[in-house]
Image (tube, rainbow, N blue to C red):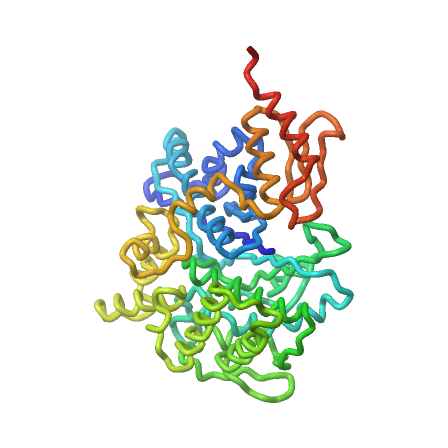
Length: 457
């Protein structure tokens, strides 16, 4: 069971307009949401959550999914859902005397050096040693960026260059219960959104936002496979790092793949060697703890090719599948054509266009249309995911309830575990099992809503 949360960068291009705050732009952008939801923090008919986060960032959290294809469809649907708000936001700004274009970027940093996140959520069993359990994942997350990073033009004291991850330089510690005051790789706040006696949530906030569906497949899929081994108490190789913060930065800035990270036992390994150890551990359990499926084979194949792309300096092995390699190919060609350095503003504009979620202005949608970026789910499935929740998890119940309540024009309250029709405690249902997609209590609520919305004859 997993989910993704994405904070989108928000930018208003209005060079001749008066000064406009991000909060004002976000307010106009979410006007239609507030109109029907009476809030800028709502759950949608597809069971996902849409809201304005700290810093005026639009944020979209997918419904809980038990398949990677459902997750990818819901994640890509989120890009379209937030983009659908743009036209009215621009119209309302124009009425307020501001002519401009709203851009939404699925990236992780802005030109001022601020960072915003893509948070991964994995449901795990509750255990007394959760902190030790989570810390065992850190070497994997530090080095995972070489196969799942979004790629970024970064500026350092030694000069501008290309890095595997835009997020790596903004991590402050391995684990913490905070997310903004002290930005960790794993957030340990105990908020499972499920039966707290049975489950914990592995809340990973070190990853990059992925434009590529195949990158999302590998990012979430490889982490899920490793967690399955850890939950089954499979003994993994001890790859504890001596200094996680130093290691994540060293890995990010070493596109050559030759730099090593120091382990707590004194050994030094490259990021590719660390990732290979984890891949080998997963492969050793195929047919045992891990059922071999076409999807698992696809994840393992892409994982292996991602490691080889760095180890053997052959980005072409994954340059239609992994974000950092897709973007690097584009930027390198442009750089060769212009004979410009990495800090050229034209490269920065191209990089930003890569992350623009607009189907018309965005560069990545064009790459997909041109066959230069591979996909996992088809367009029809993404369009369906905009309004229909995954059918095999608790999200199905939430999606049905929100859809029926909106049709009945009935006041309601929803969060990850509660469904409530306004007007009495008996109309509240608590859903603590995220794997359960049927519930007689929800059927009663739906019947009440359907009755309320039925025309009077």
